[in-house]
Image (cartoon, rainbow, N blue to C red; front, side):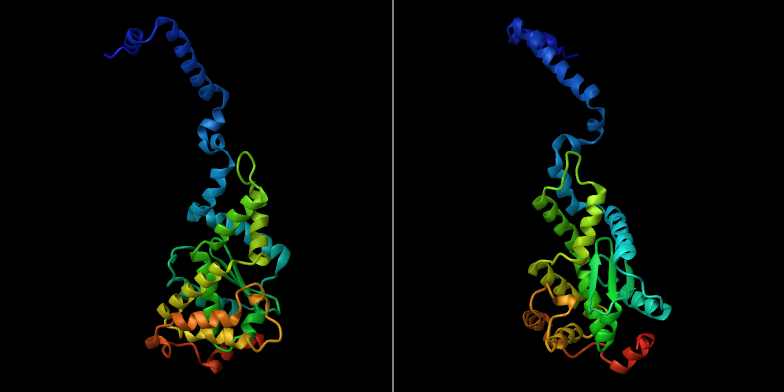
Length: 282
């Protein structure tokens, strides 16, 4: 058997042996007894930086759990669920159909209608998508509604809320010695969903993803373009676009992304059929 102490005694002056051994033993003692909780959680030894960066690589289960807490805050303090079962089932079924065509089809999506007259839709991490009653009344057909909902699914697919949360936490210095406090993360998630604008890059990524979802689900890609064209006539931009890239710029970008052979194909453009689906709102 190899004898470490015999080996080192032949190569190092004997007066250095005991200090070296003592230093090794001291380090081992520190990590084994002085910081037992840190040994079980290596992130605490490294500091808050790694904790923040891990927000962009959190598991689906962790993302959904945080999204559920954010959702509870949004529905208890900001919005009220719309009570009509027919409308809720319609939006949920449409959302599930679209989410199945996304790049994250196995996420347990939750599609909810909230009472608000503004033309708006938003999403938070973990698959939570919100559609206002004002938006449902404003769109002309199912393809337009599907386009907006697909856009929000696109944000979830690209984990934009998580990426934005990481950036804000770093910018505001919200990480402590043990990482980000859960309550801070939840409140920041609400703020991100309702008030903080997304970057132009995130919006264009979501638009691109929305087109792919629409076409894969069989809907006309013109639906999303029609929705933006409809908003050009508004004297002031609705909530949905108030902090987003200009509608005209997004229309031009979408037109370029639609394959010419798919421009006039797809379902969902029947206005009468859509009005019949949302009749309780009219």
